[in-house]
Amino acid sequence: MSQPPAMTVATRRALVRQLIEQDPALSTRKIAVQVGVGKDTVRGDLQAIRQEDAAAAPDPAASEPEPAPDGDRLVLVLDEPLRQALAVLRSQRARPDTPRENVAAARAAIRALADHLKEQQARP
Image 1 (cartoon, helix red, strand yellow):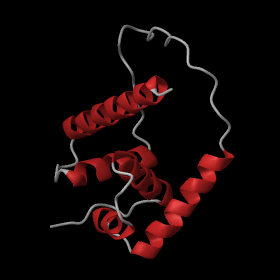
Image 2 (image 1 turned 135 degrees about the horizontal axis):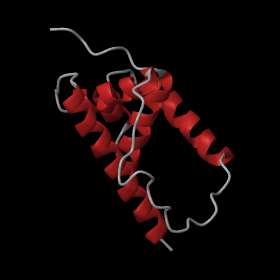
Image 3 (image 1 turned 180 degrees about the vertical axis):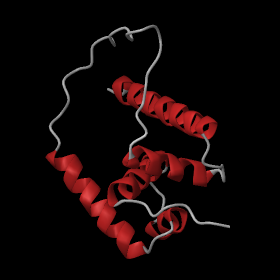
């Protein structure tokens, strides 16, 4: 059985961010086990995430989304960072690297991000 490709730092940090957003009380050790790295690596990632958040300027209030061009289609180019992110999502559910699974993982990630953004906007 082959292992999934190694994650980039950006991909790993995105996964760590997703885990702490889902469960802010999740321990460093539990995150490390889920991501497959050491707890010290997760500590560094958490520190980097905090620094990124502190440096980020607040986004202007979101307006109504613009209608999607060409109907409701979105074309994603499967570059290496996106392929690695999809590999992480698939590995969480032990899915193969097929075009169909890539589409399913991308749709799930987009829906999760959209739901998360809606929740943030709804907060006072």
